[in-house]
Image 1 (cartoon, rainbow over the protein chains, first blue to last red):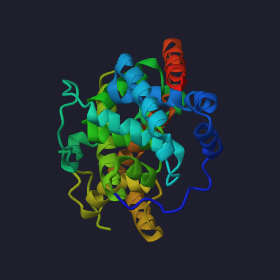
Image 2 (cartoon, rainbow over the protein chains, first blue to last red):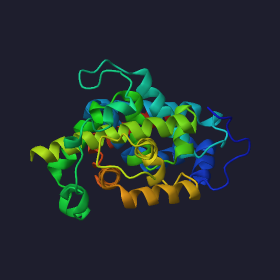
Image 3 (spheres, rainbow over the protein chains, first blue to last red):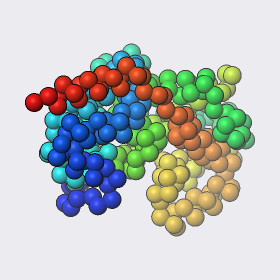
Image 4 (cartoon, each protein chain N blue to C red):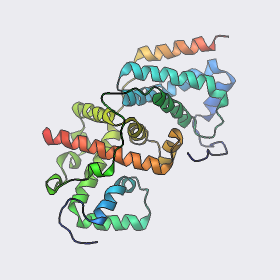
Length: 203
Length: 87
């Protein structure tokens, strides 16, 4: 991981609330929880796939935030620090999953292998307006595909494409180089694309 | 850019684009490489389709929406904080 920024982040929207929570946790900490509970719950759902595991992740994350808030030095945005804690809990709690065995994804496995695998036209699911394509069944398929990703790719995809963190922020959260984040993200996206393509080919 | 038929990505430019498609979508490539890629996309339908489906995959992830937090979890968190805050 690159060295943390030396100086406090000046544009952290949580800075004032974090200062207040440091001064009086009982008064201000509930507001910090309210700010991030839903986002962290959804991060947990994407990472674990099971609501009870996602709930445990949220609770454990806030417990750690509460305990270590005094040690937070504003070297990154508070939000990034919170996700760093959450991601680290996920990784520590990693269990062997029948849905997502740990393995490397190689670029070659996503290259079309013959000409019949190459589509001539942009398929309807990629060409139609998004709101005509996205429905509850597709949301479920997407969630299944995300859960099928090996964890080290899943966490990058969730941070970048679901939570909206930048490459640099994701690298900082996961203690990876930005180049490594880019490689994992691209393979994760190709993996999802192949799952979605298979789904739409069979609809 | 060489002429080639669609294709099992044998062409060097196709393979290079395939490897860097996400960076292209994320505007993380420099201008000259972007222009080169755009030139290739104008010639290569297979890469164009590949890029469109990858772009849609990313958009679906971003737009899939978030679940509401269960009220039981919110309550559990409030109780936890109250316990921690006790002197």
